[in-house]
Image 1 (tube, rainbow, N blue to C red):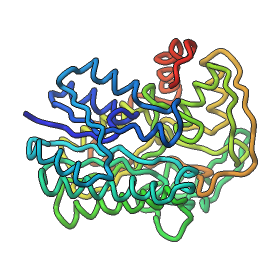
Image 2: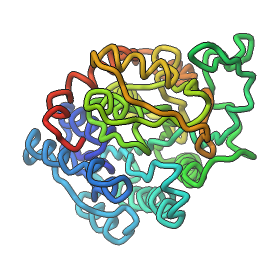
Image 3: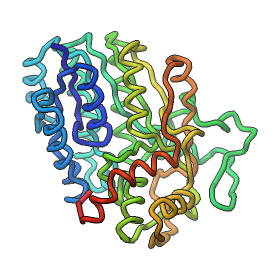
Amino acid sequence: MAVALITGSAGLIGSEAVDSLVARGFDVVGIDNDMRRRFFGDDASTSWQKSELERRHGRRYVHEAIDIRDADALMTLFDRYGDSIRVIIHTAAQPSHDWAAREPFTDFSVNATGTLNMLEACRTHCPDAVFVFTSTNKVYGDTPNRLPLIEQDTRWEIDPGHPFAEGIDESMSIDQSTHSLFGASKVAADVLVQEYGRYFGMRTGVFRGGCLTGPHHSGTMLHGFLAYLMKCTVTGTPYRVFGYKGKQVRDNIHSADLVSAFHAFIDAPHAGEVYNMGGSRFSHCSMLEAIALCQEIAGRPLSWSYEEQNRVGDHIWYVSDIGKFRRHYPAWVQQYDLTALLRDIHDQNVERWHAGATR
């Protein structure tokens, strides 16, 4: 029996990974205690996705409502499955700048200590498993804001002559910048995962995501901006834009494209490697451009307002250079550009949103 263990299994990336790994013949153990509900309220709860996973996969999916901060509970679970665990995908996290500032101890214990607990459980019980970690571009702090940026009508854009013109690669420093407390806790986790690969020789991989999104996203005002933006457009819910004149730029990757990248790594892991992974120039937009496209797809206007103060550590322009991953895994193909991504979010959720569902 080949087992895959996924934390945050009812979340956006976790649930996509469950479906994909079951299809590849794995039995999947999911760890998710729905802390997203505590972080962001009932509308952000992933309990609906847990029920869907159990319905779709039956006995091929076992759900464990374990808190990753509970090292003893994790050790007990890992001991139960032992070296039958071949793959670990660690997506569970506290993902919000604002929330981290309110509860720094909780943020750090989930993001950093929880990751350490997972690594030690893996090293103890299944050291040959491939360990995939979803990090974040926020490990670079606000260093991207020092790039030479040019204001255009609907976006900020980088000087086309700059070495990062096609996107930011892994050579950017993560040091001496303002990260937000969330970014700092993810830096700790990111470096731990690298170190377990380099020091212990474990098959770990770090994926520093841009904006990860897709139709499974339980988006809220504080996290999951594209899914939440589309939901607000469809339902008539007011939306707020924070800072940078609404011209801040993000690259956006569909959860299915990210999980297919995980599979490429799982099949041929590079121990301790780090990859920037996002939509790249293939799928990116400013806030103003995202609003316009959501309105076009939904066929209705969005009610939105602007607050001049940006969030601490927020990026003005961030596009991932995914060239290193493409060099290591040339067969991997990105399927969803921005329009296809937003249409998928809309088409898979519009009826549910109109019916008043809380996701």
